[in-house]
Length: 78
Image (cartoon, rainbow, N blue to C red):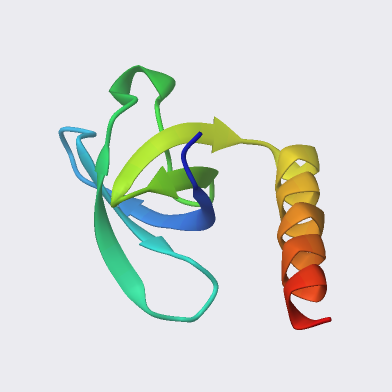
């Protein structure tokens, strides 16, 4: 199992192989797009693992990811 982090796509290169994403901390990072056939666009939410986009997700999937991560951190802090 890999650990992937949700991120918001800010921009995509013209060849669709790289993107700039924001993990929610306001810092923009360049990542590799491993799913160029998915037609990633600015405003999309994606899952990134080790600097590589591995999946495009919708709002419901994002909410599930956030709840999952919040649960892990809550359990960790108890």
